[in-house]
Length: 364
Ligand code: ATP
Image (cartoon, rainbow, N blue to C red; front, side, top):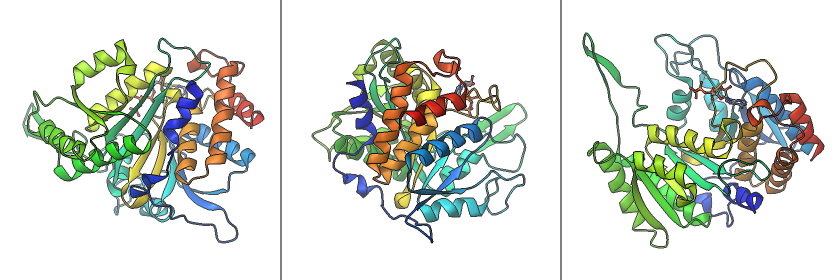
């Protein structure tokens, strides 16, 4: 049951998401391999990216990775440690996988994640959250999707000092970005057999910004009479989620709320090591990534759980409509976790990243 539920989120039953995604693919010159960009990223990133490469290679996935690294110097064209060439690679391939990136602390450059989101116009971050069969948590059959606006809100990067001891951070909400993410959420709900969309907000306090976000959601909701639409204040939403997650189906929200709620949801099903996500961009770009960060506390120790990045890679395969390969890999991951013999530390086991990855490969 849960396995069936889990698959539902990543698979689009009638392929009608093409409104939002283009199947343009970039092929390798000497074969029929599809080119995809990969950013191994920082911290545990290279270890879990290696796991994805090993699993893809064992499963015979027809993908050629174009590997890009975070640079050591700021590229003036992007004002960040990501080079223009890296961004061009994603624009060209339209599909990619991103490991966690930790932005070096310092002045004069943009956050790596913000650079990617802004430059590639990755406007929606889709984070499925499902109970994994065989991995018991406090809740059974969690089955929800958070859709986070990804380009503005509190992440606009507009902070300054007004006078000494007083700083200001601007939360930007625009009609254009709110309509775009609301459209995506309703379209997603419709094409994935979902019944309800909840807009999460704090419009009672932030009347103008969250008020505009809600106005846009309402406008889009009118075009989807078959989908139940509701509005839930963020604090109440948190309480309802921990009391009974099955009250929710698809949740759409501004940037910061999405960041917080999706981690909360990850906690419902066993933690950050398990939750995948995919960034949807203008022009059909899909950049999949794990929800978790670079986990510097366990980096380089072969302890990281690669499941979140592996499942993100599965969502990338579904975007490419390589559903057979996606099913095969997803089943192997779920079987490995359900069996319980090889589990990483975050799931209460003692296995290394390598042992877990080998077990997944054995199940392929
Ligand atoms: P960010 O600010 O980039 O989101 P963070 O420091 O808030 O990063 P993470 O890097 O995601 O959060 O780490 C939070 C905790 O979860 C850490 O204890 C980390 O070890 C653990 N963790 C995160 N990802 C994994 C994973 N894939 N496998 C095992 N543990 C993980």
